[in-house]
Structures are given as structure tokens and as C-alpha cells.
Image 1 (tube, helix red, strand yellow):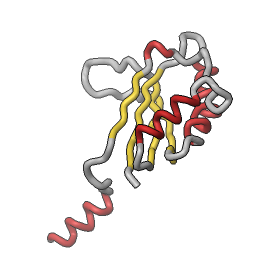
Image 2: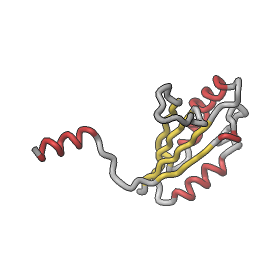
Image 3: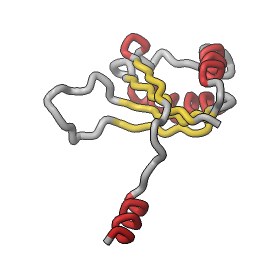
Amino acid sequence: MAKHTFLVLTNPVEGKENEYNDWYTNQHVPDVVSVPGIVAAQRFRLSDFQMGDAPSPWKYLAIYEIDTNDVKATFEDMQSRIGTDKMIMTDALDMKNLSTFMYSPITEMITTEQVARQRRKAS
């Protein structure tokens, strides 16, 4: 099964941040992970610590893990649900300032434990 990572960068509508966060965490994420092929999700808020001078235009990030051999079909299934009872939307989401990106891995994930083990073998 092919693995993909889907990144969604968003902001709430001004004055609706609490409503946005409640909807995103309690409604939207469960709706999205109900799509066949989407197996996990996690949300993030922009950290106070930033590298570089340019501020991020997005305050929130959602990362979805997708396991499918047909990522296009999975994405189309997800898109077809938007605005239905299978994927309820909110006016607290700023749809004008939303960006999405799909990534496919080019390496296996490596952990600090694996690196330490390799370095111990080498010495």
C-alpha cells in the first residue's frame, strides 16, 4: 500500500477561532478520517518560536496520513463529501486562505534510536 501525507494549512475567520477549533477537532477530523484510505490525522497550531524572518500566513496545520494505491480516487472521494452530511463544513473556516499539499515519501522514516544503533555498530 502506498503512503502519502496530506498537509492542510488554514486559518479561522476573524472572531470565530473557538468555533473553528471545536469544529475542526470534533467534526472535521473525524469526517476526514472516515474516508477510506485516510488512516490518521493530527492538528498543530503555529509555534511561538519561528525560524527566519517571514511570518507564516497560516496559524493551523493538519497532517493526514493516507494509505492507498490510488491517492487520486481517495482525494476525489474526500472532495465529493465536502458540504454533505458526511463532511459538514463551517463558516468559521477562512476558505480564501487555505492551502493543501500532497506528499509521497522518498525514504523510510528514520528514528534517533536507529541512528544511535547504527553509530554504536560503526564504532
